[in-house]
Length: 345
Image 1 (cartoon, rainbow, N blue to C red):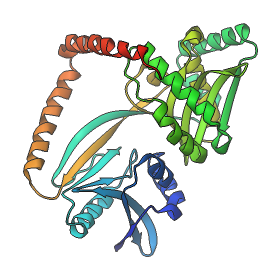
Image 2 (image 1 turned 60 degrees about the vertical axis):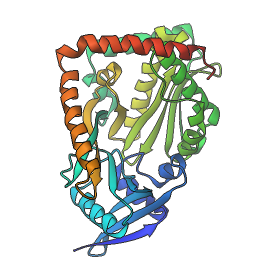
Image 3 (image 1 turned 90 degrees about the horizontal axis):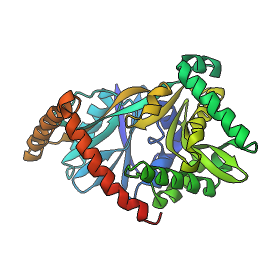
Image 4 (image 1 turned 180 degrees about the vertical axis):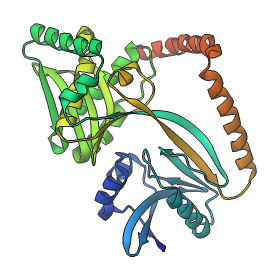
């Protein structure tokens, strides 16, 4: 028999349970506390025979309830029971959003509103085993790049720091490099200086940064977060003046090596299909987001129509017939991003 108890606030005393249960850098009290605006946080504790089996965190803003257990597998029964409890006890709530779960959920009166691919590397027990799984050309390419860098810059140093060892200047520099690299590649940047304070605060709890430094100058780096046996590569960037040395990828290899040595079992590269992710053995895992409605409202039927259209468009996007349109959109995106090169960071 499962019992449910509801509490207000964040379950800080259950932080270790969340980390072990969900293995997600997003599903921690510290992340929710730092990256969310002050909100009406609540959580449900699920016990079976007096044993805690799950914990469901959510916030409520107006008619919308958002589940904050994200980027992880969440049990179907827990979602079902949480949905019943919230609709029964919070009459103002008309819809519940469940974002970024790795498993398909079969939920009554729900709409799938987003599907993406999260790339995950299953880490072996030794760095030797990982190197052997890489393609021969990748191994050769990385070896030559590192030898070239160390020949031209003998003082180049590979650094890794954890938690409170991490300095804010390092976070600032890597985010800046990521921003500049996106502009250089004519892509829309996802990070800027407004993120730095929150990223730095969170890194003090679960952060792991790997970077390459030459005479005190950081030329490439990756900000990541460790959760239980997994690590998530959150932001990666490198100085375009050092592109010939493939410093961004050398940083990733260094981070993977350190992760294996720490006994971690997986590395999450987050969403977006980029060539380096598959080269470093990342495998796509579907990430699904749902809206669950209280009743069969107009909003539900509109959402279902959008879901149908989304599925049709997604099938077209993945087909060969969409290639001319994709190329045209890339040209338009490049033109709009050009303006960012004139912006101050």
